[in-house]
Image (cartoon, rainbow, N blue to C red; front, side, top):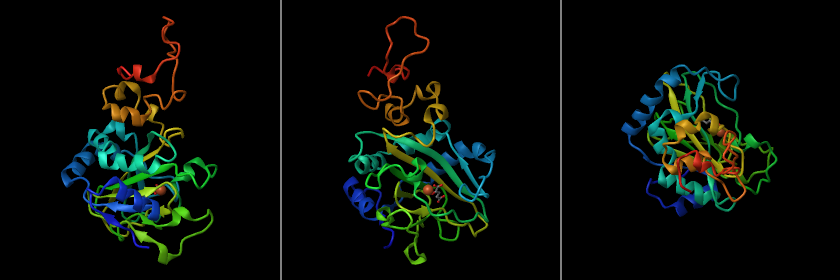
Length: 276
Ligand SMILES: O=C(O)CCC(=O)C(=O)O
Ligand SMILES: [Fe+2]
């Protein structure tokens, strides 16, 4: 099954159809080169001081740099990109009314970086969730061109329907080859892995992922992007970080220092200077 490429103005329904059948696709030219360069410029000093991964999964010649909602204004724009957010909400709607930002990271593969083992990103929650439930919608934004030679993400379209334990044959693997500014979309259940970088240039992707609002986020957004930073953000982003109640009985808080007795159980939006 080949990996499909869609135009960036494709409808949420079209994107959803492909996500449901293949579990992955490429959305072409979502942002221009300048926006990607701005994002890289905002993050470069954080990436420079990031250590390499600690094992073959995180990648011994791979740098993963997080806390991007706090660190980059351009990345914040990418997180709330309306086409992608609508696609994520549409895809996850059967399981939850709202979604959360699950993780943010740049993934830099240095020349010589080895291939990552195949996996499903939903393994962050172990294997407790029923396979029939899709918990996650994921993106990797190409911050450099992605080629088979430089480590373009490998993916097995359709494998989101496979039972745990089935491993892909070489002939079933596709490569998310795409130009800088395009975005690879993939589900939490589809099998995929970073490729090996056999060139003398870096490969860089921006991994922004979303999950059901009643699951624990992979990256702790309250610590990575604390209230004093998030307070001035777009409310859409505040919602995605988790700074708003997820439902009637999900995510309220008691102000630990309030002595007025007025706010025994408060909505988190108070911390965000919001009236809701
Ligand atoms: O770097 C990539 O292409 C994929 C990385 C990935 O799948 C992961 O870290 O979970
Ligand atoms: Fe992954």
